[in-house]
Length: 69
Image (cartoon, rainbow, N blue to C red; front, side, top):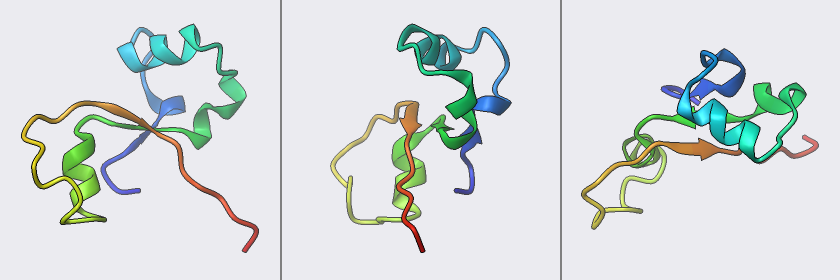
């Protein structure tokens, strides 16, 4: 998850923190959620061909998938 920041590491007052608070997501889960300042740029490191037609980048909440292995 390079270039992503855990929500638990963001400063109070950050717009992304305000979003989680508005959605009433408990702080105990913030260390499992990530913030991507430039989501499409980050996603291109994983899926280079996925969003080729998108020219504008936006910040996004990234929710990872977990499995039992």
